[in-house]
Image (cartoon, rainbow, N blue to C red; front, side, top):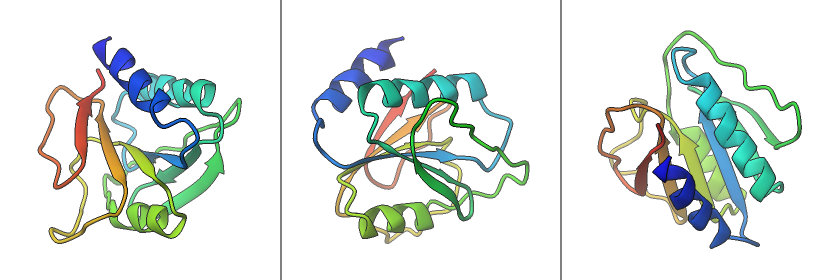
Length: 136
């Protein structure tokens, strides 16, 4: 549960900033309850956070509300490009991306904002940029 304390501090340090929480919905073979708890964590701390559901495309972008349902898919195809480009267009200052980091991302992609990769698995691949936090 060490990640709770670390994530709490990171979120508190960004109060008043434009934040997005992106959930990789490319597979239903993930820790769905853990991800729901993380979404609730954000809703309680920063209710203005935009929740983005994405796999190989953006499925939805909405504020986090009570009863927010995450729809997972079974195809296993993930690309982070569109969600990260959306964040830049929306002037998001910090993106928290819940994913196993096995999706597609161009090697030369750079973003002008902070990215925290929240990885809900024991194995944590290296991220091309940003900071990685294991959340298990």
